[in-house]
Image (tube, rainbow, N blue to C red; front, side, top):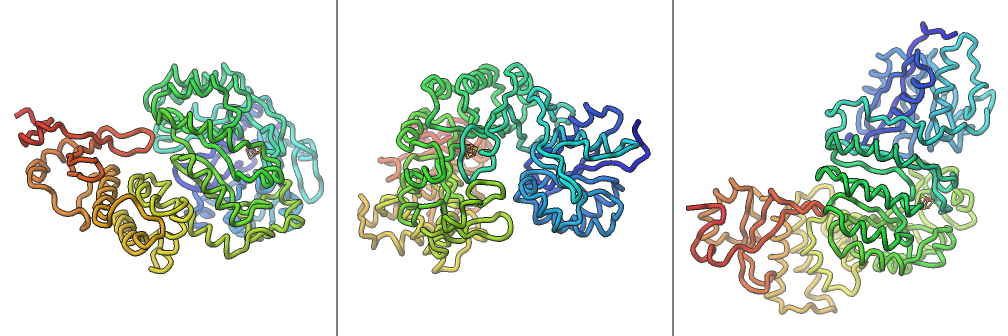
Length: 577
Ligand code: SF4
């Protein structure tokens, strides 16, 4: 009883970046096809960096009768613009919105935008029902749960069983996911109640069966996918299940694919830690949200977090250097002052993650913190991403200072391109925060921006920063000024060459010793580089940077000391003559 002569349905995704994939619309497409086998749905994928006019042109050319947009915090502004104009050039087309950015404010969206309706909550069942009704001869969207229009609200959506969710990558060609991060979910929901998080609304956690998870993970492994990011909100909320999946990945490792998980550190069992310790370097990446180490703030945001236990777990995870570790902090949480946030920063920094993300509170629609914001003195932006402007405890000026520190952190710490240099400079400051704060001030005084300088320029800036800001520091380092300068230059040189073999040598690097210069073209052909060090290495030594053999955790070239007799004889290991 379907009307297949109707115009097609198109699901539109606007991703944040090209390398991101959007499993959401593919899941809706596949699930709908399973439920409505005689009618297909088209997809159109763009990024928010594309021109809105061009996107509209492409959607228009598809001649759709119904368009569904998947709305997130990063694309809602662009969707607003597109929807307003599309409704003018396609007045008879039904425009529907779904996704977290519209699920908790459907009535507001309907009042504001010329859309036909909003799908709320998880979309698979609702969208399949929408497709069925759209093609039905007696179309009635009232029969579909999870729908809000100007005329009616059909209540909470039905949810499908996790094992019923389609595996959206099976039909894609290998080229479709080359250079893309593929997202995968083995569970939905989160048992925790953090007040700033949308996932806390869905407390019931649903899991895919392990057999199905293994089968799907094997697909990624068989196809040599580069990176798979689990969307599970707290992957290890059931320890035994996390262990089973990690064990599977360890036993079926293809030496290529890496898997990213968001976990709660303090609940990792010793068995899980032992298993992780034995994994291939680079196989697993872990993201751990600490957010604050202030017990009062943690209590106010209802976040279960024990910073001491987290520190203990981080020590264990760092020990073998085989797992890339990402920690998160959030500035602007209720009750956390500037001084207390700096303490959180220093405590988390000293856990020595590979990346420390300094995020800023976003007051998302539908979260508990949205309802408490006024009372808690949290003032935030009126437009997405609804980021905190100031709080009762943290002024706007202090938040701007933290923004500048965050830029320095991204550039000089999270890039992993300055490990030795930053490690050396830390000695001049009482706390890590003071270093980044001083560096941010140096950038401001000199009108530098992080977006503009080339990579070499950033190393040169660090040297100038040391010359102007560090020797006068009240904290003295362990070197006399001459050795300190030499040490910093060696650290900069080491960090520079650890990342890539440069075509142009920076001025501060000095001349290449003649015995190395003679071998340069041969070394380059072997994808090697050799530099001479004196202070950094404790005694004069030639270090060889091997770009064919990179550390899978940091991405930096492996560095080895050249054999002494080879240096003395001027012989290269790679030169049999
Ligand atoms: S922040 Fe993490 S742990 Fe807290 S509710 Fe959200 S997903 Fe769960």
